[in-house]
Length: 465
Image (cartoon, rainbow, N blue to C red):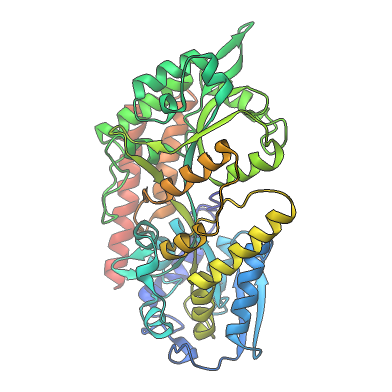
């Protein structure tokens, strides 16, 4: 579920210029978003082809929903899945040439840029016509695919973070998981000092990993600030609270010999295997995406672990939500089939059927079912009813933390310069991590770069509207 944004600004300039005339859905399709496919209607009999770019049916969660969705489409719709991560340049080129796929599976943080460039259509009529229950979706997920007041994507999976820790290392240091859940930064800094170990001048145990650069939005939000304004127009990268958050997260690495030393040691771990950093006792704690709970349970079920949510400085649970979404390209020949696919793949009954399939498979393997997190709150509640206590307090605590985190998410709003904005703040963090700049200096420069990109993108959108 990692972000795979291929930096839209790189290698796609000509494509972006070609799409300029298509802004706000006025290119090869029609303004109402139906294109050549007519009105959206859940009872309509569909036909034609449906090319889905960026999605593969690789596991039971996908295959169960795909089978159900193909049945809803009918036998007259020929579906082709173009597997692998969405190829940004290939997609934009296809739209510019007037031969787009019928549907794409994209990261939610790409939707704003795609929408502003006229590469995807607003889904107002799709949602109304197919009866997609947007009230079921989590607000942060829906906000992330809403650009300039219109929904351009249907949210799919949700990715959030929980606190993961080695309980034996905590016990030996006289600590608990509450000392490393982020609610008290001074306590967490002290815990980092107590947990880290250095042998012969080299780091042998990472005390705490604040997971930079990718988790700066998490720490900024924990400190009471967001990287961008709610309307997606104003960068807030050098807000004093953002600067303070970066300074603190960097100090965690500085106390352990600096980020290069921590990263080199971290990268040497068998992250996905039985020799992972928790199983081998070389990491005290870190925030990490929820899917890693299943990885740890599969490869090191007896590892000494403790789980909690991540907390803000007021002591409240938080998680930075990201994930995927379905979007319909501008100029597609079969938007009606694309819309039905997006509806059925993300509706409650589909998620429940997929969860039941996974639960059965896990039971056959003698493993607990830990649930599935989506952008659909109603689906999450229904799936959670399928989760049964495993009898192991540690893993049950992990599942509890996962669901609590998923109920307390935030996200960054869609904007027309998503990729450029993300690049600006990540480059700033990396420059600090590599010792090339101080936090204030780096974020001041990033603020200028990000705001210029936002201003230019919004101005272009408004002029072409």
